[in-house]
Length: 207
Image (cartoon, rainbow, N blue to C red):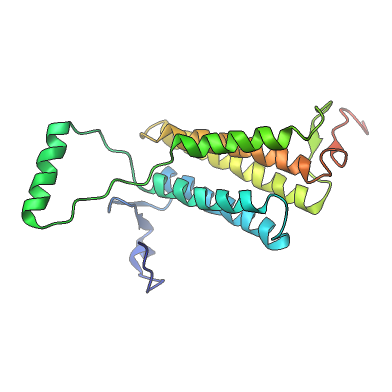
């Protein structure tokens, strides 16, 4: 349950922010950069939906927006070393004896969320003819916006991989973002009248 009453707390005035486990890190920390990028990506999808709320793929984008909050929640709580079963039992027993509600497991991205994106990619791509050239971002306004979201997604994915170089990160976060950028590319082509409206790259043109 999320309950927001006060919007400003002044706790971040020193340049730090709180993570989901209660620890505080600089706002420039790669973890903050990573899930801040997820927020930007989500906002870009919101713009697409605001422009075309009844679009063919609007239900997919709304589900993805919800998934991206799961991604952000996953990144907000650092992974910890797994404890032994004996440790888990003793901790739970101690919490029960003290009357404290047992701590809830952090929300993590799961494989079914990645698999759903793969199914959508296959479903949408089946409508498209194979490409004979790379495409330039553009065509219809919706296609251009989807390309913007795709490029944001790629940048966010890089940020997550950068974080994973020195901290443990759920690999399904990276997998989800990798599939999502592919899906956004396919949807951008679908938004160009299923491909004929694509603007194709012509290597060396104008030299």
